[in-house]
Amino acid sequence: MVKDNSTEQKILDAARSVFIQKGLDGARMQEIANEAGINKALLHYYFRSKDKLFDRIFSEAFDTISTGLGDVFSRDIPLMDKFKNFIDLYIDVLSKNPHLPVFVFGELSRNPERLQKGIEKNMNNIMGPFFIQMMQEVNLGRLRPIHPAHLMLNMIGMLVIPYVARPMIAPILKQHLNIDFQDILDERKEVIYKFISDALIIDEK
Amino acid sequence: MVKDNSTEQKILDAARSVFIQKGLDGARMQEIANEAGINKALLHYYFRSKDKLFDRIFSEAFDTISTGLGDVFSRDIPLMDKFKNFIDLYIDVLSKNPHLPVFVFGELSRNPERLQKGIEKNMNNIMGPFFIQMMQEVNLGRLRPIHPAHLMLNMIGMLVIPYVARPMIAPILKQHLNIDFQDILDERKEVIYKFISDALIIDEK
DNA sequence: GTCTATAAGTAGATAGAC
DNA sequence: GTCTATCTACTTATAGAC
Image 1 (spheres, rainbow over the protein chains, first blue to last red):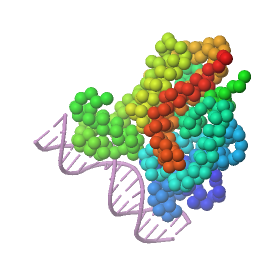
Image 2 (cartoon, rainbow over the protein chains, first blue to last red):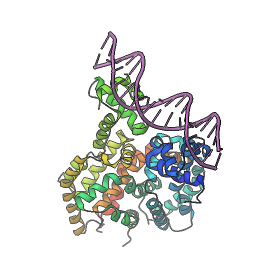
Image 3 (cartoon, rainbow over the protein chains, first blue to last red):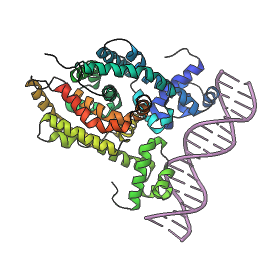
Image 4 (tube, each protein chain N blue to C red):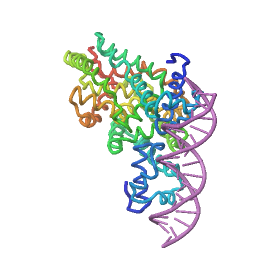
């Protein structure tokens, strides 16, 4: 993540930290300057305005959160392996960037025009073949029928929810059941894959 | 929702609308005053400060989003019926308040101390019996084993994700597959219930 | 209760020295 | 490139008339 110790890089690291924690409206240029160990004027020297600096951070975050959707689903492997790879990859990304979903979804909901154009073009080549592959498995009687869009929603929901709802759920689990949320997080990969396998795969006994 | 046309109620309606759309930091007292058809001074007359007004709105939102967790799970009915009731209730709440999850999760992630104390106490009476009921079904060989905490995460994730990620997913579905997101939303109740049924229930053929 | 006017503080952004 | 000092605009909050 950290390329070097140049001022620009220090600014980006500080901006990332502050923007993701406080959001566009809650972030202060002064705080970013402090965290970068410089002053406000230098921020404006490198990035003309708060909005421009934010755009940079948001684009980066958006790229991170849409990682793998392309790579994983375009590989020529069995469907369930795609799901497994997707789950593993996504949990790894999220565990390294736990606040990313709230940040991206929040800023996107207040300003949907931020949606990047790049993603959409790449999608065409991915979604088509993936949908066809799912239809085939269904027709072969190996998968219970479900619309691919719903399945993707289900997977993404199960993947993202622990990070999004953590401040709400972690205290409840701890207080009433003495469960550490981190233990739950550690089990998510296996649990989610098993859950969708059980839901999808038709047992042929 | 609207009790009467009193000034206080007009303020609360306006504040709810603005705060949920823009968040605490993005909201402006002037905008709330405009939307309520009054001036800023009157806002401070009714609610001493922006923070106090926000607290009121957030508490209300938090109550709404934690609706039913109690009612549904404490009723003495079969486990799968509880899930079905929970899904139906939650989707109804969300379809009437589609921006609530992003709002609550966002504000809570920036300020976890907002978590209400009330919820936690009620939880004790609910979670215990529900967990026991699940264990029994598992021991009877009717449900595939899964930790109740994971199951709840899975359900909540699948329920909430369409509303949270809508600005990101809706354009993709529309552009590449010509699917209206509203059609997906209309199918969620049935899809989610079927998905968890297929995942949980052991077929006894 | 409701208004106008204004105070007090803070934000992003720039000027200009070094 | 980096700094200090400052401008301008905006925001919450209050004072005080009606």
